[in-house]
Image (cartoon, rainbow over all chains, first blue to last red):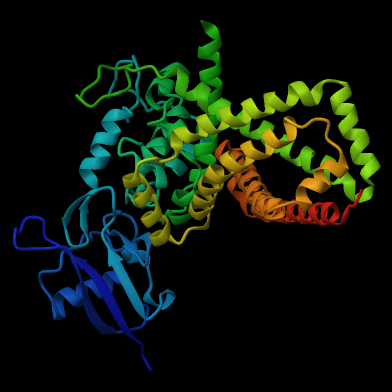
Amino acid sequence: MARELKFNIFRYNPQDPESTPHMESFVLEETDAMTLFIVLNRIREEQDPSLQFDFCCRAGICGSCGMVVNGRPSLACHTKTRDLPDEITLLPLPVYQLVGDLSVDTGSWFRELYDTVESWIHTKKAFDPTAPEERMENEVAEAIYELDRCVECGCCVAACGTARLRPDFLGAAGLNRVGRFLIDPRDERTEQDYYQVIGNDMGIFGCMGLLACEDVCPKHMPLQDQLGFLRKKMGITALKTFFKK
Amino acid sequence: MSVPLTANHKSLQCHRWDGVLDWAQMLSGAGLITFMWMHMILVASVVLSPNIMNAIAEFFEATGMAQVGGPLIFLLFLAHFALAARKIPFRLEGQKTIWEHAKLLHHTDTWLWVVQVVSAMIILVMGAIHMWVVLSDLPITALKSAARIQSGAWIYFYLLLLPLVELHVGIGLYRIAVKWGFVQRTGRKGLKRGENLLTLIFISIGVITLIRFWFLKG
């Protein structure tokens, strides 16, 4: 017999002066291979059309459906109800600006982050659109691709104790982004240039190593290894800079 | 570097000290971990024989290591606190945020950090008391230590300080290893298991040592 699932969902519309933050419960019968994507769409279609949440690809690619599921930031489309208990609490991701109910604005946050870490290839070479693309070793390309798999869902930042304590912290997503350019041979930035971006408590030295980012990342990005690599790299740069004077 | 595009651009500031302070926090922690484990093993020598402990204490005093090293360790202890305190939320608002966060997330390593912070605060006070009591009454002998532990509430004092120190030290070593990338993601589980085991072993050694002191008579 199918389970009856109770969903406690955070409700609040900041645009509506009458609205106050509260939890609202919905009950649904579980179906085969049911995901939270299916759940929320069914609630919106069958019970409350005003429920706000974000979805796009429903396949863990767009990263828009990040939310806190029973305490853990996760992608709703990746989360199967069969892995959850009968009662499920859904909250919007913290850190980001709330749009309404379960919908948050991760886009503006990431836009600002990428401006801060200068998330683009820095090169003095003039771009020639007619020239064949510069070749790089396959291993390097694969390593860059591995770090580029981030879908910017924001779960790592929402799960990060440091990010909760200091709003200017770049978070694992931001630091991983810098790491991606650090290994890219086309980027001409020096270690000193990178040190100026992330060699501080807003960047890698702010990370307290709680590793919730590593544990909640729905794409299983190698965040622990990446943060360790950056700390060592920037730590050595810090010493070089310190003893230079 | 390219020209900054936005007003919130922070990359032009140079933060030389943040990296150096992070090194100092790690190295002072690693130094204290080494000291604590050596300290535990040397004091536990009383279990084998009070004479061995006395001989070790005598060696440290004869070479001046207790008189000079003791206060230096105390300074290192204070420096480590000051360095690590840069990351501790001292305002109620921050404390509430991290507490709520840990409760919501159900994440072991986040809880371990809370344990590390709370134990740090207690160790700061109790460790300072312990160091003052021992260093202001040199020389160290097994009988004097036993007399202290058998008097008043000192046994409870050490029964609380011992697990707190070992937990703090164990979690600290684990944290250094994963934070600085000395242990990769594939080794994290094993590291944690090993760390828990080591912490248990040191707590056990400590408890056995306390029992020995409790029954040691002059």
